[in-house]
Image (cartoon, rainbow, N blue to C red):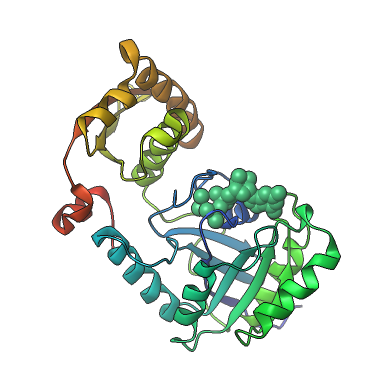
Amino acid sequence: MNNQAFKSGFVSIIGRPNVGKSTFLNRVIGQKIAIMSDKPQTTRNKIQGVYTENDSQIIFIDTPGIHKPKHKLGDFMMKVAQNTLKEVDLVLFMINAVEGYGRGDEFIIERLKETKTPVFLVVNKIDEVHPDELFPLIDHYKSLFPFKQIIPISALQGNNVGTLLDLIKEFLPEGPQYYPADQVTDHPERFIVSELIREKVLHLTREEVPHSIAVAIDSMKRRPNGDIIDVQATIVVERDSQKGIVIGKQGKVLKEVGQRARVDIEALLGSKVFLELWVKVQKDWRNKQSQLRDFGFRE
Ligand code: GDP
Ligand code: MG
Ligand code: K
C-alpha cells in the first residue's frame, strides 16, 4: 500500500517567444492542445494542460509571453501573465540554449523577482548545442536569479522531460486531484478550434499578416442526426489589404486555411466537420479594450 499523500499544483510556463513552451506542453500532455508555430506569440490565452499520475497531478498553464507592452493588448497580456505568476505553485522559466541570454529574459527576470513563487530554469533545445556551451550559459543565469532547479531538456526530442516532471512532482504541495485523470484541458473546445484556424492563417500567409489577427467562433453545433458538426468562424483583420491576403486570389488562401483547419478540428472533435469561414476588417481592434473579451481574452 502506498501511504504517501496525493500531490497536486499549478505550474506556469514562461519564457520568450519560440523557446519551446508549447512544444514542451504538447509533449507532456501528448495531444495537440497548445498551438505550435515558429512565429512568436502564437499563444495568447492561458491554456491548461493536465498531467495526471496515480500519485500526483500537474496543471500546466501556458502563459502569454511576457514582454514590454507596445500597445493595449500587450498591456493586457502582461497583466494576465503577472497575475498568473503569483497564483501558481511553481514557475518554469524556459530559455533557448541556442539563442542564449537576451534582453527579453532580463525583463522576465525582473518580473520574477517581484513574486515569491519558486522558479525552475528550464534550458530547452539542448539537442542543438554542444554540452560545453551549456555551462557558461547556466552560470550566467545562476548569477541573475536564485533558481530552485536548473534542468536542461529537449522538448522536441524528449530528453530529460521525465526528469523535469519528477522534479516538479517533488516540489508540489499535497493537494486534491482537481481534474479527472482522462481530462487534459479545461479549455473550451471553441477556443482550441479558433486557435487551430488562426494557426493555419499564420502559416499560409507567412509574414504578410501580423499576429494582430483574431478568430471568433460564431457558431459550433452538432447536427440533429449527430454525424456532422457545423462550425462558422470569422477571421478578423485590421486592414483591407490584410483581408485580401487572407482570402487570396480567387479565394485560394482562405480555401486552403479552411481545408487544413477542418482536418485538425475533425481530429480534435472526433467527428466530421463542416467549416465555414468569413473575413472581416475591424480597424485598430488591438487598442479597443472593450472588444478583447469578445475574442476570448480573459483575466
Ligand atoms: P513557444 O513560442 O515558446 O510556445 O515555442 P514553440 O513551442 O511554438 O516552439 C518554437 C519553435 O521551436 C518550433 O519550431 C519548435 O519546433 C522548436 N522547438 C521547440 N522545442 C525544441 C527543442 O527542444 N529542440 C529544437 N531543436 N527545436 C525546438
Ligand atoms: Mg506557444
Ligand atoms: K510560438
